[in-house]
Image 1 (cartoon, rainbow, N blue to C red):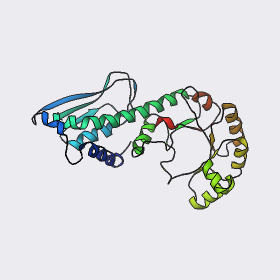
Image 2 (cartoon, one colour):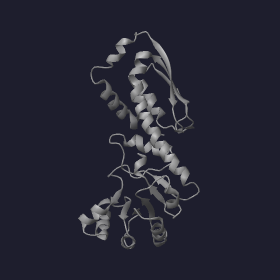
Image 3 (spheres, rainbow, N blue to C red):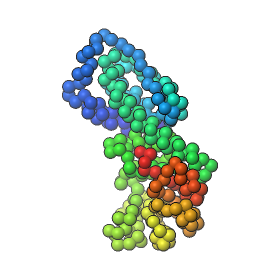
Image 4 (cartoon, rainbow, N blue to C red):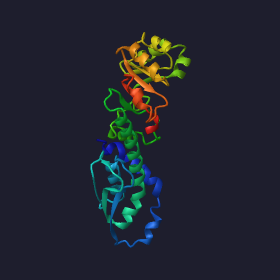
Length: 262
C-alpha cells in the first residue's frame, strides 16, 4: 500500500498549483454554510488506483470533508460509484479536480497494466514498468502499476544500473562498461541492454544480473532465452503491444517492460 509520506508532497504541490496564495475564487458563488454530498463515478470499466490519494486531497483542503470508497485495486464496470464525499460545498468543489486528475491517471495506469497481465496469464513472464513516468509523479505511477498486477523496475538512476547502448558506446565496449559498473555499484543489480545475439554472447561473459533484450522478434527472443539458460534474468522490451505481448511472454522471458503503461 502506498503511504501518506509518499504522496502527501505531491498532493501539496498539486493543490498549490491550483490555488497559489489566493485560493479558489470560484468558491465565492457558494454560500459558506452550504453542504453537499457527491459520488465519484468510473465512466468506463477498469481497475481503480489512487483512492487514498484522492481522499488525502479532500482532507488537505478541508479536514472536515468525509470521504469513503471501495477498496483500491478493485476492478469495476462502467458507471460504478467508487467514492463518496460529504462536507462543505466550497471545500468539495475546490478539491474535486485535483483529486480526479490524480485518481484518473493512476486508474488508467493500473488498467493498462492489468490488461497486459491478463494477456500473459499462464506464462512465467511478469509485466514491469520503466523510468518513462510523468516527472514528479513517479511514485504514483509505480504504485499504480503494482495495483494493476505488474512489478516495478528500478525507481531511478540511484537503485539499479542499466547499461544501455549509449553507455556502451561511451565506455568503449560492453565488457568494459559492466566491469566499471560493478566496481562503482558493488552488489547493486546490473542490467545490460543488447540488440543482437552476438552482443548477448558477450554479455553472458560478464557478471551482469539481467539482460534486456531490446526490440527482438519472438523467434530471436526464444534463441536468446535458450542461450541464457537461466544464468541471468531476461527482459524483453521495445514495441510491446497488447496484441504482441502474449507471443513475447511465451518465448520464456522473465520480464516484459512496457513504457507506455505510465
